Amino acid sequence: MSKEDIRKVLGVTAAVFAQRGQLSEAEAQEMSGLSNAAFKEVLDKVGKAAQEVKAEPGKKHDGFYDIVSHAADEYLEGIRK
Image (cartoon, rainbow, N blue to C red; front, side, top):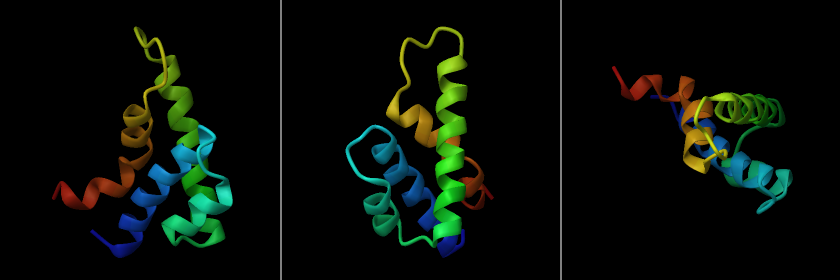
């Protein structure tokens, strides 16, 4: 697993906090250590993941860990090998 993928997983977690209003996007990006472009990619993934989680049947709310796991899935491929 590359260092960049690890940063992106951290970025996903920070971006979910930003999406929920506990951090600003700038704070989340600073915590992740990602470039502007990489953090935008992460934010886009978090937004899409939140929509997918909300659309799942039987879901009453968008759980923090559900969104993180959906958004970080691609970056975690390296640890599954």
